[in-house]
Length: 215
Image (cartoon, rainbow, N blue to C red; front, side, top):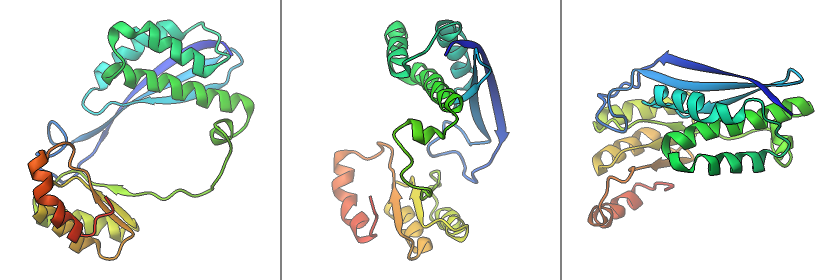
C-alpha cells in the first residue's frame, strides 16, 4: 500500500478529575489532550493512530508533522514491522523515547489499522487472531492525596460497575481509604510512580500487604 495522505487532528476535551493538581500531572487536569493521525492509502482506505499528548500535544503534533510524515508520505509500505524499524533508525538523532516515541506510535497504529481495513478484517485478526470477545476494564484514578477524596472517587468507580480500581496513592492513610471504599471488588492496586525510596518501600510494604493489594 502507498501512503498518499496524512491528516493530524488535535483535540482538547474539557475534563476535570476532581483533584487539586498535586499528584501525577504537572498542573490540575482540566483537559484531555489527544493527537490523532489519519493515513489514507492509494486505494482510498484510511487508518487511525493516536500519539500520546498529555501536557505535550503541541510537541507531539510537531513531531508528527515535521519528523515523521516527511518519511511516510509517498512511501509504499508492504511490511509494517520493517518500515517502522526503519523509521526508528532514521530518527536516531531525535532519540527513541519521549516525544519521538509518541509520534512513532501514532504512525505504527495508523498503519496497522489501515492494513486491517484494507483486508476487511478486525485488527485483532491481523495481529494473530481473535481470542476473546470481552476484556475486563479497570478504573485508573489520579492521585488525590486526601483520604476523603480517595474514598469518594473509589466508591464512585465501584458504583459505576468497575471490579478493579487502580489508585496512585503513596501514603498508608490514602491507600487505606481506598481499600475501605472499594469493598469486595476483584482487584485494588496502587501505582506510586517512583515516589518511594528504598527505605520508604521497606517501611510501607507491610501495611500494603495488610491492605490486600493485588499489586
